[in-house]
Length: 99
Length: 99
Image 1 (cartoon, helix red, strand yellow):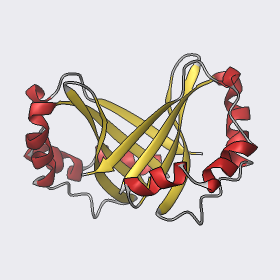
Image 2 (cartoon, rainbow over the protein chains, first blue to last red):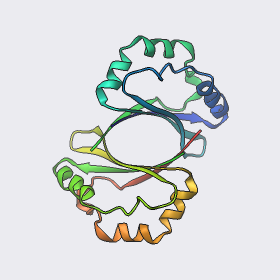
Image 3 (tube, rainbow over the protein chains, first blue to last red):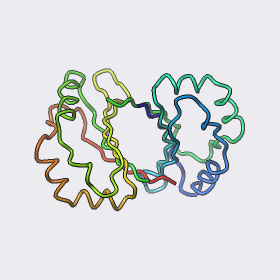
Image 4 (cartoon, helix red, strand yellow):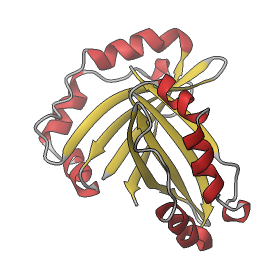
């Protein structure tokens, strides 16, 4: 099992817009081979920011890399994109394999 | 859905012992109300360390907090404990709620 987490440092005043963006976004993930689940997570809070993470589970790491190279990925990332002014730090992708 | 991730900065020479500890550990989680799944994850690599994370999914945040106060938690943490010399940085608990 493989998990990709994209960590976003979201400014508090941008939280609502950030969440709304994910809710109205079409991810085109359901038919992608190896895709298991997607969650948007709200995590640690700081004074002026909140960590959000997209949490995507895959059967295998190769399924994730195949998806990144796919048409479905292009389509999902053409529609709605996070705006840079939503964040106080660069977005950070972290990848995990179950042991 | 709620996820608790404990992040460990494991020294490379301690990886095998760290993983072995989790494999031989009895977590007593299966019968805990609200418990969904447990995974040990291997994540980002640095020169001298590797990030590992325990990844535990719960139906609800309250299930996690009830478990922390339970006898099952005490039992699981009495048996095998990570040794401080395995790590280059303090362990960090991060909690996430699905949005």
